[in-house]
Length: 420
Image (cartoon, rainbow, N blue to C red; front, side):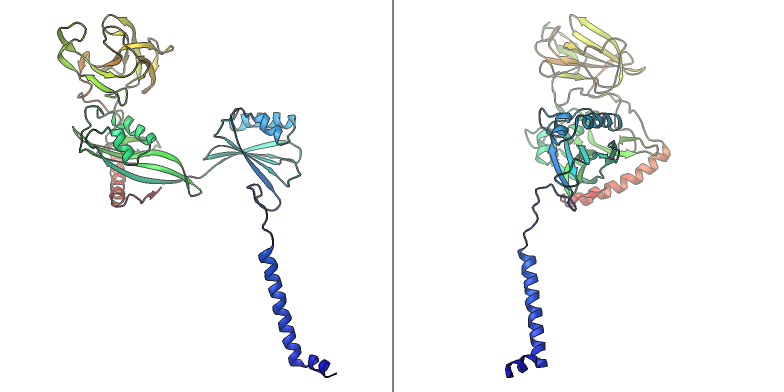
């Protein structure tokens, strides 16, 4: 009875309740800590919903992948037609496209399909209560950042090597080549000690870099002076590249049609002909390139001549406006559909490098004719395609000042970026 009385004592009861509460709390904590974590193989996403991701491999077709997920042939036909009609997707690209398949649970049929053709776009297909498949395209928001890279040409360098050393991606270097080729010749104008910088876009999604965007500004200390270009969007929404004064930086013709090609013979009024052996004028510039190298049009224009003669071999001539013509000689062959009367755009391939006619090896002979007279492609002043008007120049000057200030900050710390 004493023990019972001791147990029923209010003080002892309180102690027992407290001890029991502590014990239950410890048990609860133990169960939470030791509970097995849910298995996650990249498939579960919210509730019991199950999602699997398939990366399109070589030999995969939409039909094959859909059937493997248990969809019927009727579903496959309906999905294929919907994708083609509403999203313009008719084929899949191996090692590039991805497809997400979602089911309410592991044991139920696919209820949602997401085709991901690019990091910035996805196409969502959902099945409604009638069994019909509906399509919706979703654009993925980009996290775009402007970054700055600078370098210097060292002895024996090419611009490409110097750009790589500065950390400029190959695709951006190619874009810079295309821009600067309007103002300079990368074979003759590149010297040790020259400095350059480029500001370009990097696109991120979910904190991960996906790809590079556009060149926003570029500067190069060329032999003829500093060449600087800014990308600027006008009030009408169109964009272009302009120099520091707001004049169009993209000229109507390129000085060097083939990027990175070595100049083997310059424009001259007196040159010893390598085949004929006597001195006569060399009315163009020769660029060394291997047979079959594509030759792009130096500017937009119309084909006014295409044929063969003893000196030029296979040649093609373009008229760009009332004043300018360009000629391309010693071609191995022409592009099939580029004939007399054809309009071509700047950069469009018109033929291929060869060694036809009076030639000692494969190269491109390139001429610019202004008002009927041959001029030196490396020194002639080329007309800009488009300059800014007075009001646009004022806005451009404000934009350029902001950009220049930002570039100065980036110069101090190249690990920084500008959020666009």
